[in-house]
Image (cartoon, rainbow, N blue to C red; front, side):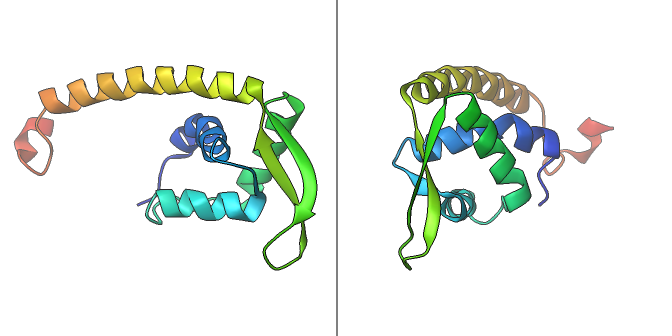
Length: 120
C-alpha cells in the first residue's frame, strides 16, 4: 500500500521525534526504525529524511553530533532536545484528537468490505 504524501508529511515530524525520544540514532537507523514500526508498510528514502532532520536541527528540536556506527563507520547521530520533547508531546495530543475523530467517523460508516452499496 502506498501512503499518500500529505499523510507522510503530516506524520513525519512526530514520528522522527518519537523515534529519537527512545535514544539517539543516525539517519539510516531512523529509516530502518520507520520500516520496522510500520511492518514494512512505510519505506522512507534518504531524500525524505535528511531534509527533515536538518530542518528539525535548525529549529532546535534536535542536536547532531558525529559518532561511529556499529560497523565503525563515521555517522552523524541525532538526539531530541527538550524543545523537541515538548513539541512531541504537543503533537501527540493533536494526533490523539485526530485519531479519535477518525475512529468515530469510521465506526459510524460501513466499510466497502462490509457494505459496498453504502459508498455509492
